[in-house]
Length: 470
Image (cartoon, rainbow, N blue to C red; front, side, top):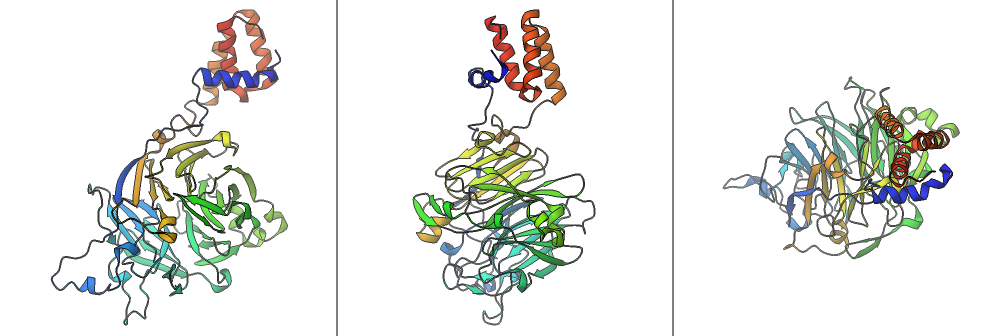
């Protein structure tokens, strides 16, 4: 049999002998917290001045959307979808063992209070997603929008707020310049490139799903620039969603982003629009050079990687730099999936980490901490927007687990041995064969190449067991 003809039977053999193909994962996330409705850690005081500062508070209007982990705190954003939101940036302690802990406003209640009889907006208006860096800074991308589902009001310019997590104070506020946004702009996600030793040499990439566009911010320069590309736009063929029985149509641009750092201080940015089933990539060396990014040469440095297939629309993603595993949400499928960076972006190379039609209805944010713990927030957002949530049911959840265990048995599982170890193991197996079969195995590997090492190992085992010459 010719080596090229071995592919199909060997794939069947791999399944037969239990070699993982990553089609199904093992559901190893657990629900750490869950809420029917959100409540806050209101101060205990008889006069209750803080409660009086939030007269419009309505628990039903408060929906968690973004999360981040830093130290012993798990941060949660609560955008001002409706008028009854209390604090739009909060945290809980990771050692809090209560099922539904109240949210603690960050950095203080005062940062969320409206002043002058409600005419002056608070320090933080309405962030969607946040990011903590290795320099103990919390980057908050504030949309500045209030009452988004009612009578939307741009109460302040979309801004990047950066807090010192050691002292819990505002370090910098950067309003996004008018020429870098449109009337339809909605800055809904950000990633922070902070892996150089110099904390001043940090860059934030701000996704405008309504523009659509990508704003690049330099901490050292305290300035930003706008990048435009066709790949940021929604796919009109992917605009229909069905989440928990709620059917709706969205036309949102770039939202999901994840960074894979490189030794030279730059990264690969993986990204996708929300209304799309495709994944793209571009190097941040290009994005940090606005003049070159605006050229025809720069335009073609953006890459189409592949597709997530039917119903493969994805909200957010996160790449674990230690393992190179990219984890992303599948909004239509109530699932979390994965892909190992550097491999081909095909359906066969994408694995399922978690899927549940109760606990994972609309996964809306994902983070992985430096210890390899994954956190996922699910919030039933479409039902909140277009229908109503049952206040007697658990609507919001944060799930967690160990990333290595979550991807174990999937195609995303990092290789346990080096290429040299695999080659040595294959050579050992070949040398144990009778000389006639040993010669056939060597010839087949020479023809096929050692990139097919798993398939060839299975073929050698089959030849040894069946005593059939190739």
